[in-house]
Length: 113
Length: 112
Image (cartoon, rainbow over the protein chains, first blue to last red):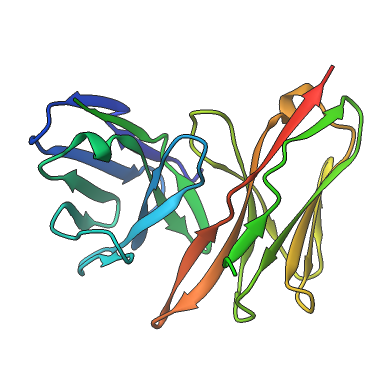
């Protein structure tokens, strides 16, 4: 149990375009999901906490207008990277909270050219 | 001081060895503690939650020391497949809710 899917698994886009990433909890309901970013050889950095039915809480230094989060249902949260730039290229990972344990999606590797 | 600190390693150990990692945390109000394993270019996978009384799962043992604010992970009889980065995660109360803080991870390489 506690499976989280993420789509797409990788995406290449041009600078200036927007990319939407979906995170789904497949076999449990998650009122809280998290979005992380991980650069090579670094640990996961929390970007925002997504709560179903309310606005996301962003970490310091993360632009909420650039990284739009929508947690529309108990099984789906989306992250949209707007007007992507090469420095946004990274590994984006979501997780869903089941009780107190986080279960991670397989991640989305974003490359902005 | 970082909220969660780990020795980045790498720890290079021979197969069959016992290896231990520590992780220190700064917020005494932290409630929950976890060890995750992350393989290269993959997502973290939950290895163990860490309970106050300590817990064991096969070759893996986790301990929590609230007084000294650290958690530990012991791996016995290391296998080649244990090679990975081990991430310490601490649940910290903030603004009426909680957030989870990751350590930078400790790299383990088990050598044949």
